[in-house]
Image (cartoon, rainbow, N blue to C red):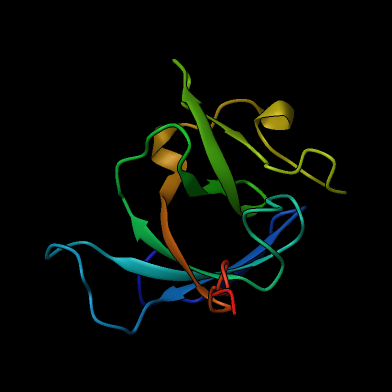
Amino acid sequence: MRASESFLRNAGDSTVQDRPYSGPNTYAEGDVLTAVHVSGDSMLPALRHGDWLLVRRGAAVRPGDVVVARRPHGLIVKRAWRLTGEGWWLESDNQSAPGRQDSWDFGAVPETEIVGRVVLRYWPRPTARFRPSR
């Protein structure tokens, strides 16, 4: 994928729209940030339908990171569980989501198919978790 292209892929349990981020790059020169739109419930409660994420392409992945991966049916957003000899084992946070597809269905994903690591969710804006007492 080139950074200037825009994609809309159906990923079974989620649809990811991928497009370049137009804001300032806060990473080292050469890093590429991409905005992705998520639909589906497979990553509840961490991610919800309608969330927009910033993804750092080619970033190092550690167990527990949320990543975007390339699959034959499109792009998916999943949690990197562990690195195996075949690649990353990716799992949905919500295993009971209808249409969920992860490594339990298709096995480990080769490292070359990991597009990048999710850096942050920027929309909808995070809500205040604690309200000051009165």
